[in-house]
Amino acid sequence: MSRQRTSWVRGLILLLAAAALAALGFFLLFGRPDPVSQPAESTPTTPAPLISPPPTTVLPTPEQPEPIETGPEPIEPPTDKELQRLLDQSSPANLSPDQEKALVALGSRVLIADLTGKGRAEFADYFRGETGPPRAVHTNVRIRAGIARAVSERSDQVDVTLIWSSRGPKGELLEEERSTIRLAYANGRWVPVNDVGPNPSP
Image 1 (cartoon, rainbow, N blue to C red):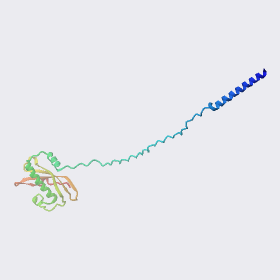
Image 2: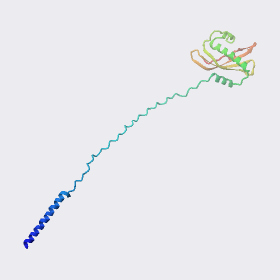
Image 3: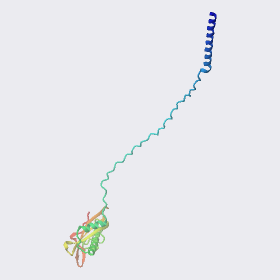
Image 4: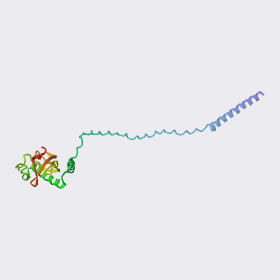
């Protein structure tokens, strides 16, 4: 009986060993899990560098030239019409327009003769016989404006006031010069007298 028990135990051990071997074989054949396919490691992508715009070049502000002090702007010289208006407004008219115009023309001839020497023979008494050119000769004489006014309400004497320009004896340009010629009515005509003679500026 003990032999039978030993055989039975031996058989059980063999059976268990066979089962264990079978289980091991099954595990080796079917039980090993398939290797999980690992995703390929992705190569980290380096982000493309941002292209920076070229640096802005700040141009230096050009230096502004300092204003040149030129002083006050030159005043435009008055025109002949403006000078005539100023003369007309300097004193009230007391002669008729036609008479004043004729006397201004006569006084202008006297002044031109005095400045240039031309036409002095017409007024020989006034120039005391000096019919030649003056010692200081003016050229390019131009009468720019003129008026005639009776002297102290007298009807036989007038003062002719003239504004003129010329090239002076030294070549200088003279502008807006003023002279007064006195005329007197004698022997039926107007003549220059030396009470108030021509007084051109030097």
